Length: 274
Image (tube, rainbow, N blue to C red; front, side, top):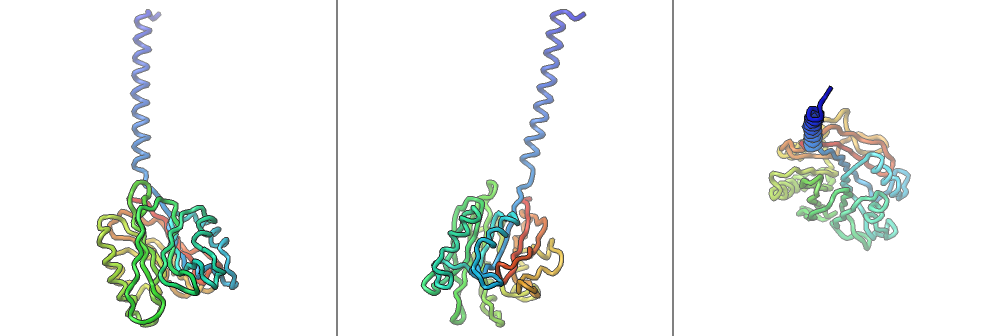
């Protein structure tokens, strides 16, 4: 039979052990939450001003595709804002509303009474936005490099979006490489994702030069050819998701979803922060 003193002591020991065990479990749980890698999905998509293979401008099917793929950040090229061919519609604003994401549009040149350029849809807070217009070697479509600083799970991520020249002569694309390299410098030490329509195939000298500073996500974890154009029967890979070589971003998988919403197919990749 336990005396009141022994009973009190036994209860005290029990409570102490329970407290230690609870503290241990909470500590393990907190440690697990702190070390669990943050995951994000990135998409790049040349949307051809919203015009699909049927010749119709339909942003709803683009938005539904983005939501279906679970993209957190989307790099869009060939985006109209107030352009005559798309009935003066504000495509960035419409896509933001349809997806529930923030849309940042950067104008590269005036077209049919409106603006035409690149845009980024994001679920993360936007810290800063810059748009750099590339130098041009000949008259034609002005191209640009969109640069966003995003707050992703408490860390700064540099997200770049571009659409390079399409000419068979790659002189202008080669010149653009120097601009991209220069724009990377202020962000040294921070992870960079570079997305877009590069209008060149993986064996080109432009891609080889990009490969000196970036990893081609498809080459790292992709399966198959990764062709993105033409959308109906793709034969070339010209749309890319590049990441800096510092290993702060670890690619998990990358894929090309089927779609008839544009003349390109989108590319989607999943990453976690190391």
